[in-house]
Length: 287
Image 1: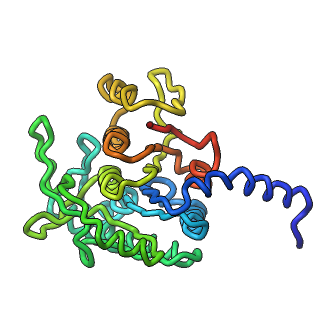
Image 2: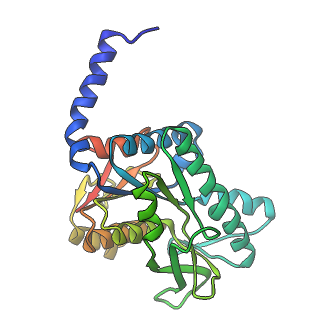
Image 3: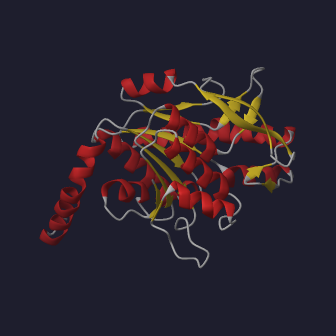
């Protein structure tokens, strides 16, 4: 069955609206943190992979950093391991780390790169086994809380990432870092994505989440905020839990050379493309 005239007009309209953005971001690096519902729902997963492939095919340079919280939680439950979160980070003992290495380090990393490659663009996973991209040291919270084998990013080695980009291959980066003794550390994926964006002087940092974006104290979506406003929101405790490291990563990235950061609703189909190719977007812009 062919496309109707109305459908063709809609497609042409979308392409026409998107063209200025394709021109603006042609050849630019866009770092996308992939996580939450967009990783769990089969329809959203396929849509995400196709969107990333399309970005590459129209001349943008997407770099993916992924999470894997739901997958890790499911595996920990099967293994009978109780896991807890503090300050937006998963407390990681040795048993938890073994699951994180397998699921976040290898399984999810391979699945995402395979999905993107099946969607029409070449992709390669960078993880603790085949890459030294994410170098880390143990994170101790400001309150002195020991989070176990949780890391903070010391340095992102960009050589492998840039090498892949130069060959038109999409890098897919796991947030499991290596310390100076090559011990694995579990790092918040939003933090890693922010540091990757900074290290690459990316044009954009896009962080997918399971909420509509940053809201004010009355629950109203803030479609655009300054870094100053974002810091006030953090200071006043308006955002909580996993949104805290997300907003901190976005603010730090814009402070350190990334043109703009976006916290968007990954539950919306094609959220990444809507954020890049439309004026309105689907979340909060931090500039």
